[in-house]
Structures are given as structure tokens and as C-alpha cells.
Amino acid sequence: MAFAVSAPLNGMQAAVDLRRAEDRMRTGLSWLDSHHSFSFGRHFDPDNTHFGLLLVSNDDVVKPGAGFETHPHEDMEIITWVLHGQLVHQDSEGHADVIYPGLAQRMSAGTGILHSEKNDAWRLTGQAEHADLVHFVQMWVVPDEPGIRPGYEQLEIADELLRGGLVPIASGMARDEGRSAIRIKQRDAALFAARLAPDAEVRIPVAPYVHLFVAQGTVQLEGAGRLGAGDAARIVAADGQRVTAIEPAEILVWEMHAQLDLR
Image 1 (cartoon, rainbow, N blue to C red):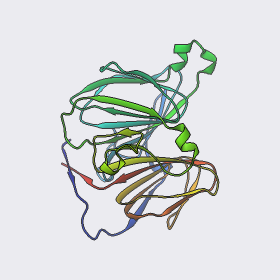
Image 2: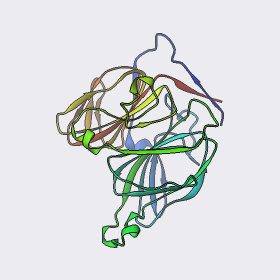
Image 3: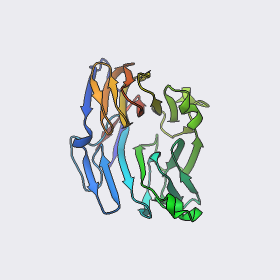
Image 4: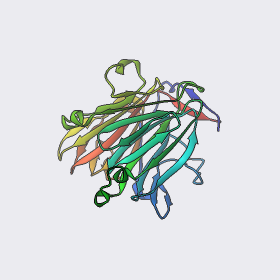
């Protein structure tokens, strides 16, 4: 699939499109329970291919001892955010790491990379009694240009999340140089996370396109209503609406200043 990136239109009409968890497309296997916010794999809906620059947002649960075997990617910025458990990443560039809650991780597929993602961290320690499900969200955005060199980056940000507010996980925006945990090669996008105690609130960024995903818990989005785990809001011409936690919650927020034109 070919794509191009275009700037937002002037005078965009503000709009909020709520997408409920139960309406997502689903892949159910013996070892995997995956919910797709956008068309993915054999699930294709021509009216639900992307939002802004966000092409994939998969909400995955993988059983112990299982996972995604080695497979290829190219020309994509891939961010993985673990909510529960541990995920082992290995790739053809020589990286082998364990991803866990509070660790920001980015893989740039570029000209081509092979990687695997498995729920077998417990095998590395020999502590089988700690084998558990791993729950993570994986998100893909297109890079500024194709054919970049593959790369990998990760950084622990658990302490920043404890302070509250929106914490920048990954950004390619110039204003976030030295501010975001990790860098992505997409100059018009930034990803934030927040862990919210009951009644705590944050304001979403002011941007042409904002994607709010409730990873855990329940929140109230100003002017739109209640969102539970797995729900999302696609917000056009976002103007800093408040997000308030009704119960302990974790949210992922994409701020985007351009959109994809799929061809």
C-alpha cells in the first residue's frame, strides 16, 4: 500500500468520533487475543484504515511461552507499550531486550528488519512460577521518508509516570528534542502516556488530530462522555479537552499535525 503525508486543511471542523472496545476487529488464536483499532492483516475495512498518521493500534494479550515468531517489517516506526507482564524482543540488528510496564520502546523498520516478540521472559530466569499473560499495545506510524536505516531505542520512564500528567513517550517533533523519552522519525507526531488516579485530570494536546486510547480503567472525556478500557476517541481540531479519571486509568494519546493519504 502506497501512502503520502499531507498537511491538515485550514478551517477544520472540530469533531469527536468515539470508537468502542467491543466494536474493534479481533484476531483470536489459541495463544493470542488481539483487538485492532484499524484495519490489520486479514481484517480490512476501507472506511477504517488509519487516523491522522496512526496506521496501527493493536491491543494484544499473549499467553506464556507463546508469541510472534520472527517476521519482517519495513518503512514503519513501531512503538510497543507494555501494560502487564514482560515481552521479549529480538531483532536482526542484534537487539535482545525485555520490555515491561514503564519502558518506552521504539523500533524503526526502515529498509527492512526481522524481529520476534514473545512472552517467554520467565524462561530466561528459570522462574516458571512467574509465567503470566503479557498485555501490550503496539502502534505504527509512517516515517518522514522511506529507506532509513533500521534502528531501536528504549528508555525507562516509570518514575516520570508516577508524577502524573501526560508524559512524552516518543516524538519526532522538533519542540520535543531532549524532552521525549525516545525519538521517532516522524516530525509531525508525538505519543504521550498518563497514569491517572481517580479524579486526576489532564488536557489533551491542541492539534489537528488527536487519538486517545484508554488502555486501562475508565475516564471522562470533556464534551464526549465516558470511555472504558479499550475505547478510543478520534478527535479532529482538538482544543485541549480535559480527560478525567473515574477510576485508576492509563491512557495513550497521539498528537498529530499531518495525515496519511493512502493510495
